[in-house]
Length: 153
Image (cartoon, rainbow, N blue to C red; front, side, top):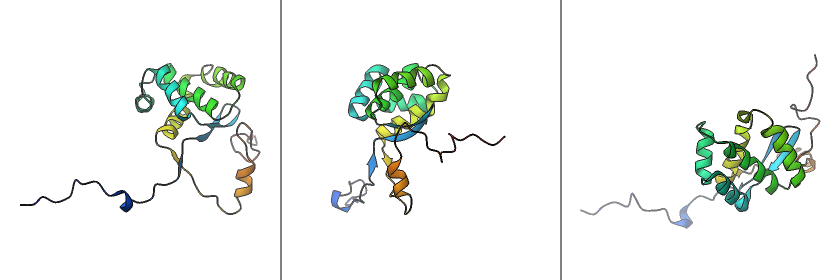
């Protein structure tokens, strides 16, 4: 009796196109929105600093078994890879990561690790939003950003 081809891999030509993904994410940290892009160099630095590969670091962050470097390293190397100047990175880490309860920074570290490992699917620009999105820059507060405006008392 001939066996079916159930376990065979799908030929490359028959696969659906892979969505356009990027290994970066913009996130709010302390005083503004910053670009986090650890890249392969950052991934190696995170791995060495945390003594664990990126998936293990993400797993520890996701299951509340994280270590201090599991939180700090992705943020540090993500900021550096995203183009934040070294002095600013030190300030941001000291003020908003290690200078605050570490649990506050866990979601940021998770998001950076997810971008590194899985990528973030790029969304096509919607009509009317292209100019606004193109003019915003990391590290700058947006007047329309609800997190930067004060609520009326």
